[in-house]
Length: 203
Length: 124
Image 1 (cartoon, rainbow over the protein chains, first blue to last red):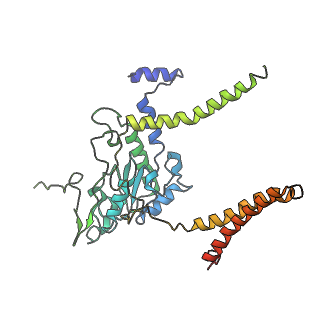
Image 2 (cartoon, each protein chain N blue to C red; image 1 turned 120 degrees about the vertical axis):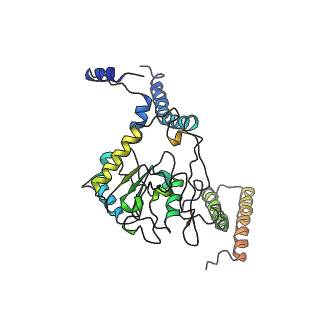
């Protein structure tokens, strides 16, 4: 492993050194293909972000794939209703590893203004491992771009070996998350307890 | 360069071209095989249906009656191929060849008659 100081010194002389991990993550971070997938008004901002004015293509994330088989990133853009939640989880399960999730907007994070609604899921993080959450109602395209950049930062810093290696390189971690079923009053189970626990109140 | 060696460049180029195509494929396969564990599952192996649960099997049967049209086409196709040289050399043929050709044609026409009587030529 090369030291950071020596690396900088070499770079000043025009010699670039890299490790396989950096090269791999560099490629991965700059080709994050999202799934074509919009649930509510946040999707309009997502479309705007991918169009010429905001140009998500600068970050290698403009190739919205119409099939989960080809996508790396799921942008949960909008209100997740309880009717839609199993479909979202199933689509996530059908995406190949490595895969990432951006929860875009207040609804995808927490249910947003519809939190008290009987039919709205109070945050997709109850079923899916969210990597980046964007607040806003809806977030502007700049916010989505910031989320993509944050995700790129996360991918770049992932270690490919060792106990902290990402999920897709660890054979022991399951690839699929349980898909909730439509129950009589709520989704069953109402949350994935391994991913999300209700916050405990300190009195 | 000699004439015998001039093809060596082509061979080298061909090898390089095939290698250029196969190396990334081999690297991708090796990466998937040795580093990235496969995680198949019920949902992942499902037929893709926009997030809804898949219904039925992808291995469904299609009607195979097209083979009849294939056979009738073959009758006319083979007939055309053999009739043209037969017609060109018709005047110079001995009697035996003529008889053999007629038998062959009768066999093909018999197939056509069979298909006709079965009603395959009546398209509804």
